Image (cartoon, rainbow, N blue to C red; front, side):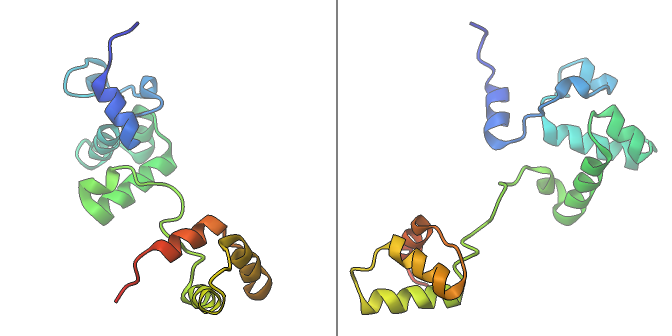
Length: 150
C-alpha cells in the first residue's frame, strides 16, 4: 500500500487538487520542493504572476501551467475581485433555497396554518399547480424547520 499523502488528501477535500498536475510544464514545478503542481491554487497564482511579472502572454502562461485560456481569464477575474482568496475553490451549484421566494414561503405558511396535517409532498404538489414552481418536498421541510428571521 502506498504511503498516505496528507497534503494531496487535504487538497482533494477542499477541491484544490489539480486533476492534471502532469500538464504543468513550468521548470520550477518539476524540481519539487516549494512548488507543487498538485496545488491548483498555487498553479493558478504562478500562472498569473508569469504574465504580470515575467511578461509572458496569457496563452503562453496558460499552456505552461497546463490550463486553458478560459481558466486563465477566470483566475484573473477572481484574483482581481477577491485577491488571493478568489483563487480558492468555491462550492458549485445553487447557494441557497432560490426557489423558496417570499411568495412561495407565504404560500407555505398560509397552507400550514390552515391545515397542520398538510405534508411537504402535498405542499410541493400544490405549489407546482398553483404557483408553477417545482420545489422538492425536502426543501420545504428544511425551510419550515429553519428559524425565522426577526
